[in-house]
Image (tube, rainbow, N blue to C red):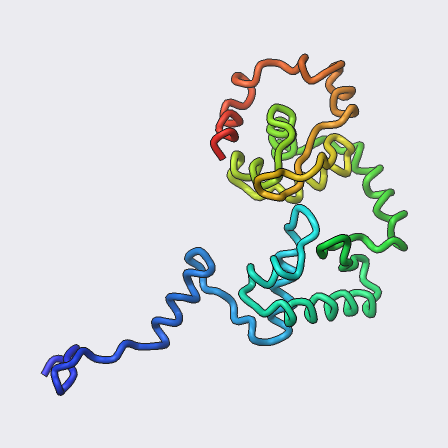
Length: 215
């Protein structure tokens, strides 16, 4: 008798564990979805998402992304915020408008300002220059579209460009809801240009930027 056949001729019962595992894997785009049953795991997942948001994320959106009840996510957000405050952390989690986002705690603003001022003396990396070029030629543009063109995460680079005063937030993209970015007057000043119209032709510098229109 084959191991694949039930004694009465019926198909053998499916392995519920394997079925559930496949569903869980699909949630993560081919990666195993983390078990968020514990409060610690849920808190960690929220931290991971909030670290990369373009703009404050609401409880409903976070609950949908993590496939958790809104009430549980809301409780977790408040728990996280209180934890950062109790630990006197240099970052704080605040609800601003309709969403949550990480911010530098005000008391440490002088430290951050000194770092940013010192950072002005350092040259931009190749990754920062490429990201700046994409923004310059396709502004206003969101972080996700820049990342799609470059093929890598650009969150850290965008923060650097913002800190250097070379780009600024320019409203919300009507399609994705993400924050759009534009270059600043300082950007033009550093290049010795009076307007964006004086930028050289795009093709010889960064041909792949044309692909952003298809993203």
